[in-house]
Length: 179
Image 1 (tube, rainbow, N blue to C red):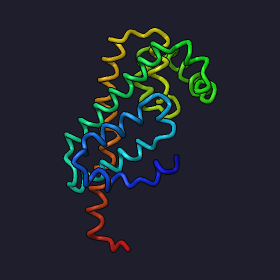
Image 2 (image 1 turned 30 degrees about the vertical axis):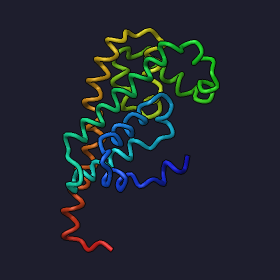
Image 3 (image 1 turned 180 degrees about the vertical axis):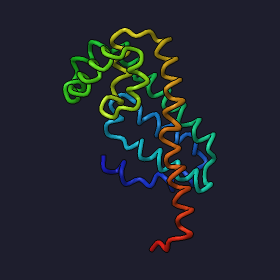
């Protein structure tokens, strides 16, 4: 998995005709069941925000593709939970990440539908909460609505810090000699 950390995402995105698809896939993998544990998507999304600050990418399409990837990733995870709830609970995957699943189940029990929105921002359970919501019988319609609204907040929450820091860096660069 070290190869995921060695990819120069900024160069890949900046020089590609598939920029939207790449941003979509980063957000999708960041939010997909268990893949979010090992995929450095949040770091890549902040870096993408830095590219927006430099003018290499446009803000609105970048936010759209991040939003779309997050919605699809969580939706797929939810439906995996719906259709594979019993096999999932008895799988090696569950056993390997049992602590995250148990924390996610407790979180879902405590916060109900709000756990879908809140869980998107809580690292240890982000990768499992949609599947848990599906396996615990949450309505697909309610999940979808909460998923969309939380992704509308999530995408800017990961992209805009990169934009702000990138812009700040470009302003400081003119006053500080960086070697």
